[in-house]
Image 1 (cartoon, rainbow, N blue to C red):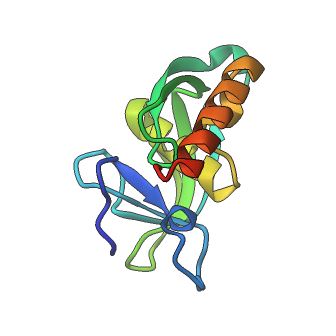
Image 2 (image 1 turned 45 degrees about the vertical axis):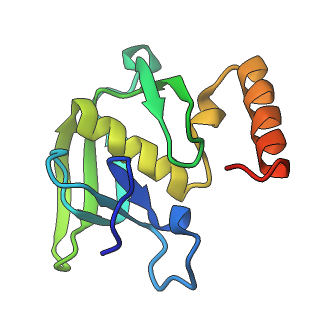
Length: 138
C-alpha cells in the first residue's frame, strides 16, 4: 500500500494515479483506531438527527496549510471490506476514527472540507488556491 504523507489517511482518488480497479478505497496510518485499508465503505450515523453533529477543525492534504471547522457525526456504523477481503458489517467507530471515515468518504464522493465551509470562506480559499497554483505553488 502506498505510503501516506503527513496526514492520517488518504483516499484512492487523492493519489491521482490510475486507472483504478477499485476506486472506493482509502488507506489509514496505524494507530488511528481503523483498519489499514477500507474498501467500498458505506457509513451511517449512530444517531440520525443533524443536531447530533459535532464541529471540529480538520486539515486536508488536498488543501494544504488550511484547517476548517467541519461538522461530523461523533459515532458511526461502517460496512466495508478489509485488505484481506473480509467483509465487515455494522462496525462502530467514534471520535477521531469516525471523523476520518467521514472525511475520506467525502473524498470518495468528490467532496473536500471546503464543501462544508461557509460561502465566504469557500470563495476566499478557492481564490487563494488558484493564485498559488498559477504562481507555481501547491
